[in-house]
Image (cartoon, rainbow, N blue to C red):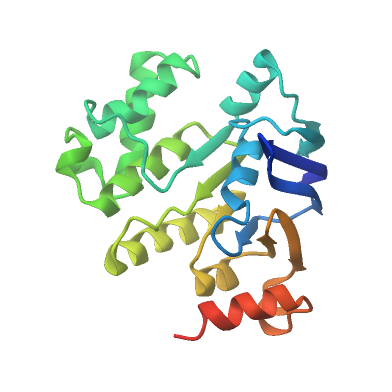
Length: 243
C-alpha cells in the first residue's frame, strides 16, 4: 500500500477534526491509527474511504489521487473494502445476501457469480452454515466476520477497518483479530483504527498516533510503543497500558 496525505484538513462547522495532517507510507501492508478518543482517527479513515470530503488538502492511494467528486468517488469506493465497528449489515437480509447484493448492484456481477463468490468467502471464514441467517440470528463475532467477508469479497485494493472489535466481548474480539491477522498474512493491505494496543504493535508495519486532529507520532511499532518521542504519545500509552 502506498498512501500519501498532504495537509489534510477536515472541519465540521467551526470545529477542526483533522488539522493539517501530512503522511506518506509506501510498501506498507498494515498502517494502524491509534490515539485518544476524539483525536480524528475515524474521520481520517472515512476521508481515505471517500465517505467524507476533506475541507482542504490532497490524498493519493497507490499512486492515484483521490478525487472528491461524484463519479470519481464512486469508482474509488468500489475499490475499497470498509468494515465498521457497528457491522453495518442489512438487518432484513441473510448473511449470504448481505454479500451478494453489493457484488451484483455495485460491482456488476451476475447473480450466479455473486453467489459463488459469496459462498466461497463465507466458507473460508467458517460461516457457510450460517449463510441463510439474518444478522439478529448471529453472534456479534459472526456478524463482524460477515462484514469482513463482504469487504473481502469485492477483492479491494485496501481494507479499511474502523474499530472492528469495539462492540465485541473478549472471546469474540480474539476471534475477529485472528481473522484480520490471517487476512494480512494473505497479502491484503489494511488501514486499521484500533484501541487494541497489543494487536496494533504485533500486526502493523507502521503506526500513527492521532491526537486533537494531528499526528503526534509516526513510525514502526517498536519505536512508537517502545521508545516514543512525543510527550503526547508517552502520556497516552502510560494511561492505556497501565492495566
